[in-house]
Image (cartoon, rainbow over all chains, first blue to last red; front, side):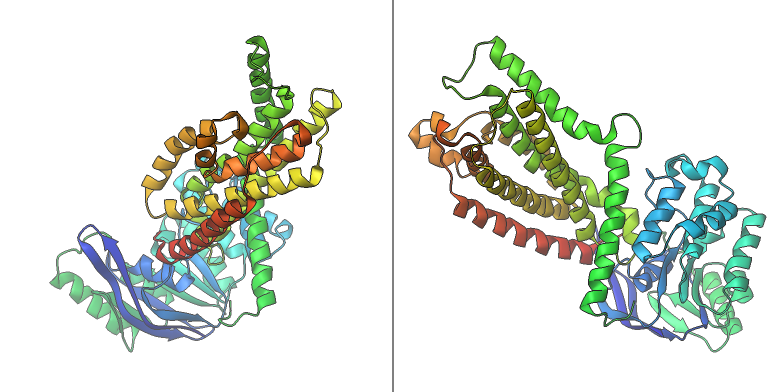
Amino acid sequence: MLSLHHVSKRYHTRQGMRAVLDDVSFSLERGRNLGILGRNGAGKSTLIRLISGAERPTAGYVHRGMSVSWPLAFGGAFQAHLTGLDNLKFVCRVYGVDYRPLVPFVEDFTELGAYFREPVLHYSNGMMTRLAFALSMAIEFDCFLIDEAMVVGDVRFHERCHVELFQKRKDRAFILVTHDAAVIRMYCENAAVLHQGHLLPFPTVDAAYDFYLQSIAAQPQAQEA
Amino acid sequence: MHAAASLSQCLQVQRRVLHALLMRQIITRFGRENLGVLWLVAEPMLFTLGVTTLWSATGMNHGSSLPIVAFAVTGYSSVLLWRNAVSRAGAAVESNKSLLYHRNVQVIDVIASTIVIEIGGATCSFMALSALFIFIGWMPVPADLLLVAAGWIMLAWFGSALALLIGASASFSPLVERLWHPLAYLVFPLSGAAFMVDWLPARYQSIVLLLPMVDGVELLRQGYFGGLVHTHYDVGYMALVSLALSLGGLYMAREAGRRLEM
C-alpha cells in the first residue's frame, strides 16, 4: 500500500513561504488507481514528485509499501549529454536490472532509429517523450506515477502508451494527475480534486468531475506554478 | 522500496547508484571520442613540460639543487587533487539535477561520484606521469614511498571534503560557485605548488602553512625528495581542517537533499 500522511509542501519564494500542498492524506492499495484533477499551478506535479520521493515534504510523510515509479513525465529523469542507450543503462543500473534484454523493446517502442545512440540533447520533444515513456516501462513497478505531460505526442504514441500501461500493465496501481477531466474519466476508478492546496476526495469519478468543472467556472485561472 | 530497508539492502542500493553515476560521469567527463581518458595524463604532462622548459630556459633553478621535473610534477599534481574535484563538484548537482528524479539518487551520491572520478583521475595521472618521467630518467625515484602516499591521501581527503562542502553549498546559491573560481586562482600561487615553505622568510612560513594544501604538498615532497629538502608541515592541523570540512560537507549535503526543488 502507498499512503500519504498529512503531507504539506511549502516553497521559498520572493514573497516569502508559499504553501503548495496543505495536509494531504490518502492511500492507494496495490492494483488500484486514482486520478487527481487540478488546474495549472494547483500543485499536481509537486504532489507527484513528493509521492515519488524525488522531493521531500515540508511536513508529514509518505509511506511506500510497494515499488513506486519516478514521475512519468516527458523531459525529466534523463541526462541530456548521454545517448538514449546510455540513459537506459543508467536507469537499469540504478534500479538493479540488466539492460541488455530491454534494448529491443526500447528501440522498438521509441522508434528512434540511429538516434537511440545519439545524445538526448539532439532529440525533438516527441522523441524525448517516447524515450521517457519507454524507460519507465522498462523497469517494472507496482505503482506508476503519471503526469499529464505524458499526454503530449501524436495519436499513434497515445495508442501505444495506452496499450503498454493500461492493457499490458492493468494489474498495476497508478496515480494519474491531469487538468483534463476527460482523461480521468477514461482511465480512473477513483478521482480526487486538488483544490487550493487540499486534496478533496469524491465518492465517484463523476462527482469529482462535476466539482472540478464548477470550480473552473467559478474562479479565474490560477497562476502558473 | 519499503520503509524499513535493512542495512545490507541500503548498501546494495548505494552501490548500484554509485556505479550508475560513475559510468555516467566517465562518459561525459572523458567522452567517447578523441583522446578521452588520455587527457587525464596529457593535460598535466603538457603543463609540466611547459614549466620545465620555462624554468630551464630562464635559468631559474630556485637557488636549489631540486630536480625541476619532479618539483613541477609533485606541485601541479597536488593542485589537480584539490582544485579539479572542487570545481567539478560545484557544478555537479546542477548538471545532474534531472537524475535526482530517481528517488535513490541523492545529492550526496552525485557529488561523491564526481569526487571519486576527479580524485581517481588525478591519482592515475600522477602515477602515470611519475612512472613515465622516472622511466626516461627525468625524475628520481621517490625517497620514501609511504610518505608520498601519506601526503597524497591527506591532499585527497582535504580535496574531497572541500569538494563535498562546495558542491552541496552550490545547490543553495550559485554565488558559491562564482566565488570559488576566483578564489581558486588566488590560492593557486599560495598553494605550495611552485615554492617550498623553507624558501620563505620565517614569519611568512607559519601564515602560509595555514592553507592545508601547503602542508599536504610539503609532506608529499618530504616523501619524494627525502633528505634533499627541508620541509615544514603539520599533519594534525591538516587532518583537523579536513575533518571539519567533511562534517560541514555532510551536513550541507543532507540539507541540500532535503531542500531540493526540481
